[in-house]
Image (cartoon, rainbow, N blue to C red; front, side, top):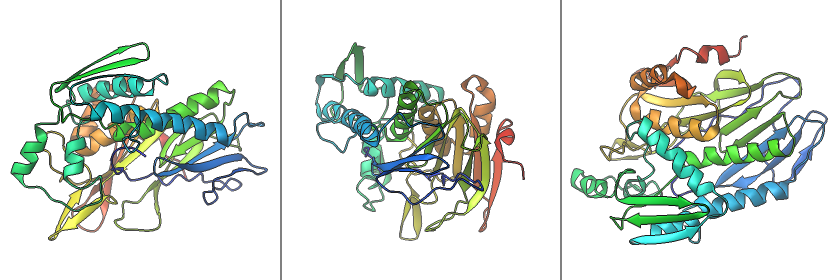
Amino acid sequence: MFGTVKRKAQIWSVIISSTLALFSCTSQMESTTEAKYIRGETQGTTYEIIIADAEVNVTKAEIDSLLAMFDASLSTYITTSKISSLNAAPEVIQVVDSSGFLKSCYLQSEKVFLATNGAFDPSVFPLVKGWGFMDKVETPLSQSEVNELLKDVGFNEHHTINFKGDTILLSKTNPSFKLDFNAIAQGYSVDVLADFLTARGHKNFYVEIGGELVLRGRNIEGENWRIGIDVPTENSKTHEIENIVQFTDQAIATSGNYRKFYEKNGKKYAHFLNPKTGFPVQHSLLSVSVIAPNCATADAYATAFMVMGAKETLEFVEKHSELKLEVYLLESNGKSGFKRSMSKGFQSYLKKS
């Protein structure tokens, strides 16, 4: 589990097929005549792997071991993790991370931070904790309290970091500076599992952790994988499909504020915080689904776009075609319903009836 409560809506990960259906999550590997499943728990949520190849060349124990190694590098809930050691240091610290996970996550985060002009910022830990989202405590903040916390936020401030081989050297100019890769690490962990499966020779598979997905090859029917996107309904214990996308060899992540918020004195406080203002976002965007070449990228941009809002998101995607992003947005219509919009290329992913 990572350092903050996930500020995401999960894609309701459904493979819609006459012969292929998902079963309730278990901690065992199952085989059917249709496909092979590996399921378990990680990062405070569940994972599921579906392999559509003839043979399975990985075990659940190997998957769990890899995920444990990932947490040992990037989980702020583990006091002995590499990131926890960096966060606890008041000034200068050197750690060795032979996995390379922290370095990769930092560098990928830096790219998104710069591209989005700080809408995605992995230094928001003080704000997330201050607003009570990390500890599930309802603590709205005043402007003066937010101003104080903002002094500790800024991914391009308060520190320098150097990577040399497996060694990470962090120097802080502000002891309160802390890293929190919650908004990218889960997507990155999906990429790690997908790369592991590929290295073992698998070509047709689905990897999902907490609603973040990587899809490769074809499903058991020889078709592109089909994924459902939730209707953005508050406090619903069931999932209603708003639309279906069909694609392969890419990743998808969805972020939303309609399931993650608290209400205090009649006002809603969404889990998505604007790193520049320090306050929860207040625009009409309910959820954004991002298709990208890899899941870390999809995850990070889904968070950034929830901060930016619908108009700025669509403009960003059109302007930055080199990133190969496509987005699907659901906005409140000001009443009880919602309206949808999407980038130009997303239409090709929607399943035709």
